[in-house]
Length: 249
Image (cartoon, rainbow, N blue to C red; front, side):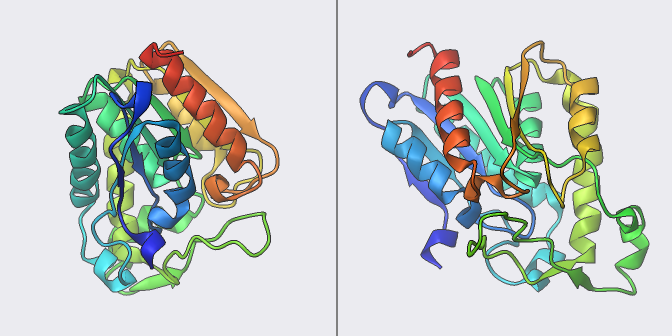
C-alpha cells in the first residue's frame, strides 16, 4: 500500500525550518499517521515519518524485531530533521507516543505531541509475554479501534507475542526516562480507548519532568484518533502548538 510507506516533506515558506518527526504505532504503519503528516506538510513544516522495522510487511517479521530497532528508525527520522531545521518536534500515536517521549528524553526536541500514548497495557497477559512467546506465537489483532465507520488503519491481523514482550521492555525503559523530559507536551486522550488504558496517562502525569503538560480530551474517537472523528482537532491544535513553541505565530 502506498499509504503504508514512509513519508517525507521538505517544508516550505515560513515553516520550512521547523520539522516534525511523526511515528505510527505497534502492529500498524504510516497509514494511521498519513493524513496528519500530509496536513503538516501542507502547512509548510518539514515532515519525516518512517516505516518502523518489522511493520508494513507481516506479523511474523515483527515477531523477530527487537524494540531497539523501532527506536533506531524513529530516532534517525528525528536526527535527519535536526540536521536541517532550527526546531524539531516529535509526534506519535500509541507506541509511537512512547517512542516520541523516549526521543524527547535523549534529544533537545522543541516539543512533543502524542495521541493516546502507550506506556502500560490493557491486557494482563502482557506481563507474561516473555514466557508465553515460547508457547503462543500470536494473539488476535489490536488494530482498527476506530469509532468512525468504514475506516481501517490496515494493521496486522495478528499480534505476535514475542513483539508484545519487546513492547513491554520499551515501555519499562521509557517510563524510567520520563523525568528527563523537559520539553512542552501536548497529549490528546480519547475518553473511550479499547487499547491503551488510562494508567498510561497517569504514569506520564506522575513522572514527566516537563512543567508544561496539556491534556486534550477527545470525546468522539477511539484509540486510532488520528483517523477518527476528532482528527481535524488533533491536526489544527498540534499545528498551533508547534507554531507557538517554534516562535513563528
